[in-house]
Length: 131
Image 1: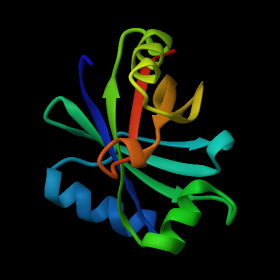
Image 2: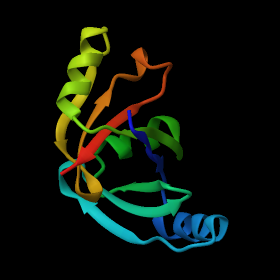
Image 3: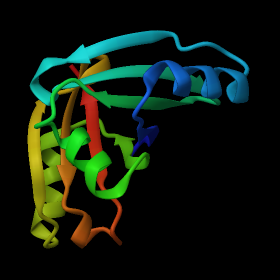
Image 4: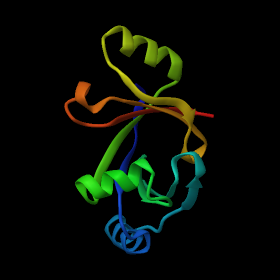
């Protein structure tokens, strides 16, 4: 793992959440991006070398919509940057960690995969790499 890449926060109202995080972090969102494969609209903020990613569903069938329905708004995942996604997945699955989804394209030009939260202290962990 190279660094904490971002934290993902599920929100119900993207504009309201952007206002809050813009005020708290002292900087506006630098990018909005729709990820069609995830049926989600994202908004990114820089935060001390890492990022905050706000996620709002664009479909009632998306994982974020289901998360909001079951758990409400709040922390969705913690993402770590890796140099070689496949090698990290191989290393972790050899240790018994299960992959929920991925590798696949994600937001911000990343390739991503998620580890099963039952294996990671109930925290959804995303591994991501450039391109």
